[in-house]
Amino acid sequence: MAPFSRNFRFQKPSRSAGAVLAIVLVVLVVMMLGGVALLRSVDTSALLSGNLAFKRDTVNRSTIGLNEAFKVMKSLNFATYAESNAGCAAGACTDAAKWLAMNYSPRLLETDANGIPVVMADATAFDAKFSTIKPIDTLPGKKEKDGSLIRFLIERMCTDFGPSNENVCAVSDRVQVGGDTRNSPIGAVSLPLYRITVRSDGPRNTQTYAQAIVTTRVK
Image (tube, rainbow, N blue to C red):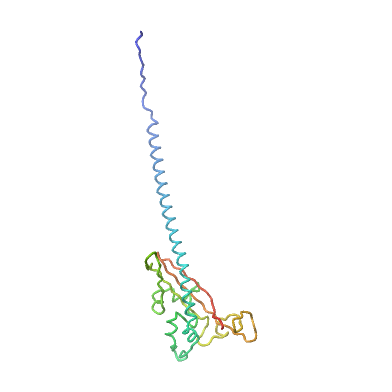
């Protein structure tokens, strides 16, 4: 039997091996950067979603201020003092304290370019004169305050104190006494318009303003 022999042939290492390693490292770096960018994108999306949720919550809470304003406008004090001009001719109005207690102004106040009363933009100045609502969230089994604040202001759309009339006030279409909303030249009256402005503050410095133009109802 002939002896078995095997020839071994040795080759020098290829120079391309180092280039492949460099390419792999570059690919790994690019993938790592892509992962970091994706993570930042997810974090930003979550942050934006959270901010939008808080913003929507402040919009929903503005209805609390509107409801409180409606309660004031249906109160006996509002019916008694809303068009009072007692003492105003001599300077300070006698019933000014009554108006402040109702978050009410018998004439329009100074506004900014967006039509928002300037006094509402400064929370400290507003709280020094008017009342502020702190809503309480009802959670399962307990109640907690979330720090949200509601401020509302009722303005009669007039340029002066005293009884409203078409010369100094913005008024509604003439309506007939008795609740009929049809225009009627006989026995009809014009009602003053009121502007209700609500400021709703929530977490993360979210802030929403809402306005409504309303009037009273003739019984």
